[in-house]
Length: 219
Image (cartoon, rainbow, N blue to C red; front, side):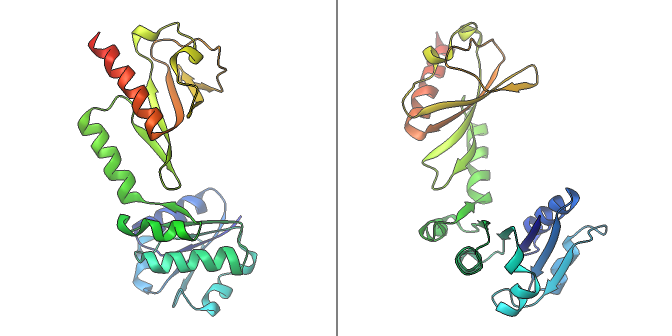
């Protein structure tokens, strides 16, 4: 795939190198030439120094033929504009933008962009670990109304059937992992103690399930 990464800070460099290592053709753009020092020495993708908002730089990067683009500069407004231009003007099929300031997350959402917010995700994960939550979130989709949660099956639910454990409304089991092997479970699948479930749910459904788990701990 031809992929453009705009912004070569720590996040951009990590993304670019990871994709390059998987065999993709990568072009990295940054207005600070010194930022390219964040890339490992064995990176062999293309680097472009210049104003990321100019059409000339985007065209030189091959945006007309790009399969995907990530805008990960530390400026939320710039990321939003770049994402919108890539998706609407150049019809790049897969566009993702980084949210730097969580208070400005709604700006990205107003343009219908795929958004990753490392600050929000990291803070939420730390909060869950410190508070000992029994159903931590591992992925937040869109505005966070729906998230994917990870759950370990307690001994009390060994042999239970999924449809009896998980609320059917606003809650979907997307995977079950047992002894390191993942599967797509069915509603009548029996779980075993130590299984790991990944569940897509609204916050309300996740909280209801979390309360059931806490009750099991106390019983």
